[in-house]
Length: 256
Image (cartoon, rainbow, N blue to C red; front, top):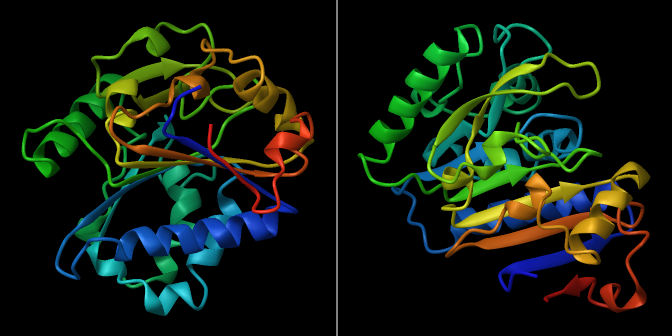
């Protein structure tokens, strides 16, 4: 178990999402002046949707200095940004269009392009933003699937063995969603300063058990371990149902 991994368990998804929003707001205030930029990479899927809604509501809508946040995406499906299958579309509907943020702060993956073109353009976007140095996001928000995938890094794929690429074309079928995707690689994800991994519902309990009890290091989500960053796992009780009592302290926190 990696030493920089922290687990927090909540009674229900609503409390989890609100605490995640408070944690994000705290990071934005932690050692950052109002002039400094804060880079945040977002995931799609169903798990983080309530979090994005809460961030778009009060008190976060008006108390967070959104103009200093630079939004990136962890992964994207190969569809136009106007389609509901697009991760950009999801975040835009739930969050971006409801807050005050300059267009130049939005760095989406262009899923309407070919995979090769989208990878090329997004890689250049990342390198330009980080001035040619190694990509290191201030915050990455991740979910995980019932198969243990995270972003668009799927079990058994060659991409989970690639620690050199910043961004990769991938293919994977999950819940009948489009199979061709673009994803950040482990090099980018594991160079982040902070990572939040969200998990809710009984369908995620098996993966949580594999990660925390069986220590299955081959699952893509298990490979999220920033060399110098922090990983915060936020789970509801349903997702944590197979964890023993030692994980359920009164403070709801557990540091391995």
